[in-house]
Length: 357
Image 1: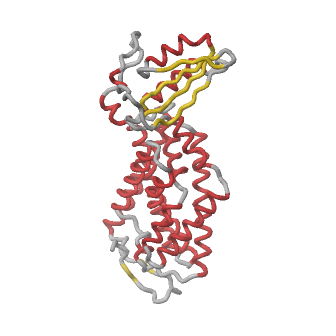
Image 2: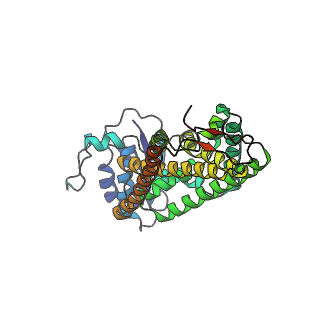
Image 3: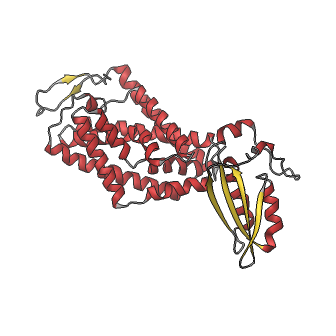
């Protein structure tokens, strides 16, 4: 069972109230005196109970001098701690025991505070972030140009785009406008940096749009939409369980890095129409990731601060997705997604259908 060690420090005068709160969330705890008239409580809490415990402690003691909470990951506990549903609710009945559905979906999710801590560093616009984004896009561009899928996968592994994309979905779910602005700024700057350098690369190397790895980034198929939705949901599931950001990032990068690199190459080689097609694929993938991410966060029990803001943002993303799906469906119905027409200065002014291989 996933659990956390929670250490709570309060003044001596708040001991009784603290004991009552802790007893509602875990089955056993330890108390010890610390200097300066403070008491420390240590308790091992199931991961799904962390959210409510921290929220209740914050509501009761946020203005109390000396109050602090430390949350640590626990590798093993012996004897095993009873599940939360086995702990009797408070006599007042203020807190209902969780339903089986809530327990199933929130069983392994880490707390909102831990999610914030995990994502904070990835939103810093540091040279390392920009350099890694640029290098991953250049590697992906060169890999797609030569048709080497393994190289493209390597580029996805190093791409640091998980943090901003997960932060956007998390900000929409919580209704945190400050987090959303930071995430959007970091993601947009990273995308433009990658586009700029792949554009320069496209100016100095020969780019053949008929290479399958590039050709498949010029059209949005229904399978691409399904893939982006699946990537967004899988990314949130892994991220909300505290998985390594580097490993989880591959799920998101697979939908973002290739179209960014392809768009830059096409613009740099003078194939503007193909570049805009690749950007449309990128925009579609971003919308899908956010829609799937918000839904997955909500299903996992991430509590919105304001349902009106959360539902409004989700509605906007959903409308955009429906419009994009309509455009894709219209192109397929009209048959306008068939040939790629290369510009007049391309090697042979060829025509090819960009369908999947």
